[in-house]
Structure formats: structure tokens, C-alpha cells
Length: 198
Image 1 (cartoon, one colour):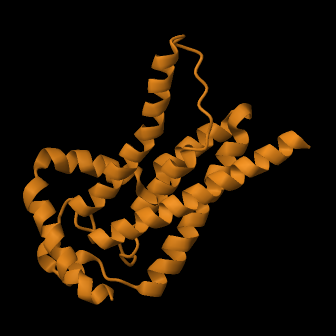
Image 2 (cartoon, rainbow, N blue to C red):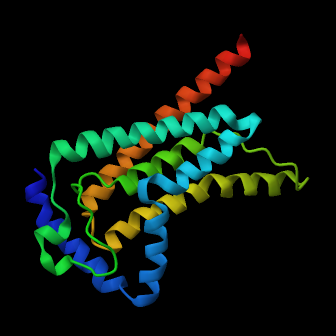
């Protein structure tokens, strides 16, 4: 099935490269693709949560969630499907800015870990001491809920920008990440509710 989609994926990648590629964006996207490697930025957030007593269980739950999405995507799906990277399908898609990863292409684990982290964070309570205005607090809370998804989207897009993933790789990573992230968040919340009830 993926073989029939791949030529269309390649067309989209060429269009993205032709529309956006420039030295300034190269540097910006390199930063985002770097912090998304192995879910680094999300693991860092999880460790910050785990370091605080009030959010320790959330931090541990997030680390477990990131590990779970890594096992499912990086170890299971990638090596089950074994899809080649875009530059191996079309050498014209090769870029000198980032190296071509040795692992298979499907799914994108930059997208998977990023959206798992973002989805998980929707469960984590946001405590705000200030400002006192309820509308402002609501706006800040909304922004803090949206921000992880914006970061996840930029990290995922960086993989298309550098043509190291096909669009369907990224889409699959997003679906996988959201599913695992929601499951992890729900499971962690359930654990906390049971601890509080006991």
C-alpha cells in the first residue's frame, strides 16, 4: 500500500522544499529537529515534572508514555514496515543540512514522541497563582494547552522540511503519538485518582 502512495508523497516533499527551503529556515528547522530527536525536549519536560513533588507522578507517567511510543514506533512499526527514507527513493530529495537517519522511515518518531508528549500534557493540571483576573487566567491556561501542540507540529514539519520523512510517515507518527499520549495521560490520571481515594 505504501509503495503506491510513495510517488505522491515525494511530490509533496518536493513542493515543500521548493516553497520553503532557505538558509534562515535551515537553521531554525535544524534547531527544532534537534530538540525533537529521541523525544529530548519532551523527556526534559517530563523530568522537570518528576522533580517536583506535586507533579512527580505526572512526570513518571510522561516518561513511561514516551518510552511506550518509542517501543511501538521505533522498535516495532519501523522494523515491521521497513520503509526506505525519501532520499533513497528519490536522490533529488537528499539534503546536506542533516544526515539521512539509518533507521526506516515509517512512522516518524519525531512526530510520534512530540505528539505523545503534547497529548499527555493536556491531562496535567495547570496551577496559576497570578494574575487574579479569571479571563486572563483562562487565556493563559488555553495558551499553555496549545503551545505543546504548536511545538510538536513544528518539530514534525522539520522532518518534512529536511526531506527525511514522507508526509504519510509524519501523519502516522502524529496518530500514533496522540493515541499513546492520551492513553498514557488517562492511565496516569486514573492512578492518581485511585491514590487519592485510598
